Length: 494
Ligand SMILES: NC(=O)c1ccc[n+]([C@@H]2O[C@H](COP(=O)([O-])OP(=O)(O)OC[C@H]3O[C@@H](n4cnc5c(N)ncnc54)[C@H](O)[C@@H]3O)[C@@H](O)[C@H]2O)c1
Image 1: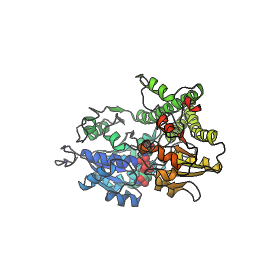
Image 2 (image 1 turned 135 degrees about the horizontal axis):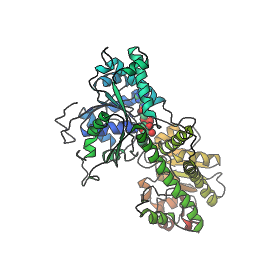
Image 3 (image 1 turned 90 degrees about the vertical axis):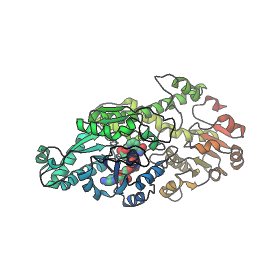
Image 4 (image 1 turned 60 degrees about the vertical axis):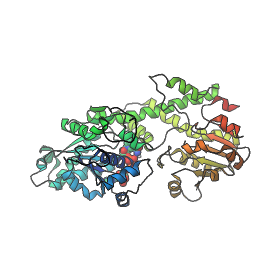
């Protein structure tokens, strides 16, 4: 363990750990920057050489508020560094804690694709074998704590252990069974991540809880010490008052920790689908889902969050995690009708945008539609499972011409699209100009500040706004002479 006496930006003198993180994406990079901010020495590894090179001079691979500053500080203080996978050997020797934070995308059958995690686990085993003197795994003073931060199905902790052991066996030229008999050079823990893109740094430093699962007491104690400045909320922050007094540290077994992550996302996705189902009923009976959500959300048992009706959920986590949880259930021949319904309601919501446009414009052939907001949610440029891409494709199939605008994701979208599909522009008024309808797909704050009179004057007449996130005040939009159609507002029929 390193003793750090001079934490210039944190202001705390804490005993910093030597930490390795494999995977420098949204989760790995944010975790690395935050741990460095707490006073630990962190080396982030990635197989993407271009990403590693740019990160070394604090150039961000994606948009995430507050991250660039934290990474710059980390690099300047030499607490945060970046390297290619070759550095695993050194880390296997020096690090006390090694996180796995690589991608686990949805596989063809809906289950989580663990190929990146498996490659890293084997690599850690081989690196451990190389890092240790010929005496065998027991010659490492204390076991390396390998922490799975990637979202993985139940049982993956044991799977990772097995692969590390196999990698170790390959490295020292022994059968895995023989290597397994040695005192362990490593232990595996699960530490699921709950950050939200768009507020990832805040969510990491002011977490609602930290969950750690392991069968090893030593691993649980080490991880508690690693996170202590967050648990105790003792790290330096400019926020006054601090949003949190203390952060619950939940320790459990490996399988329960893995289950907590999937259950969390499945519950939130279901909550959104639930309010969307209610919102569709509100449209029929003439109620306002915003009022309904407010009324039920005041009930402490329900809570006000994740009750916004609209286009539904997308992004890099909810779709794949719900799908992976259903795949786990299938392995046990267990049915998950509630999750199936959540997915099916979500699919319908995207189509409802098209239905609303068709109801107002009749045919969409030859119509110009402006999509406002392309990232899957505000404050990120992440396009994974972004509703905008599917809606644009559906509109084009129906003969419409689509123009898209996003405050930060525009260039990323433009580079992904085949020629002849959605045209991306870099000014919201340019997108709206001449459009028969504008659709708010992502509720970026700047759309609330649009000059609605200008919008009305630029659009094809009569102008129409479909608010896929119920983000604008219908009265203000109507006052500017624009037809407004939201989600779950019964009075929209008028
Ligand atoms: N993004 C989120 O909001 C979020 C939130 C919670 C949990 N998670 C989970 O965390 C995990 C990571 O997600 P992410 O969004 O950070 O993914 P990401 O795709 O942004 O980043 C993954 C990184 O891992 C690197 N990588 C892959 N294989 C590698 C290897 N063998 N060696 C070195 N680097 C390798 C990739 O190059 C990439 O930079 C996933 O399991 C995800 O489900 C994500």
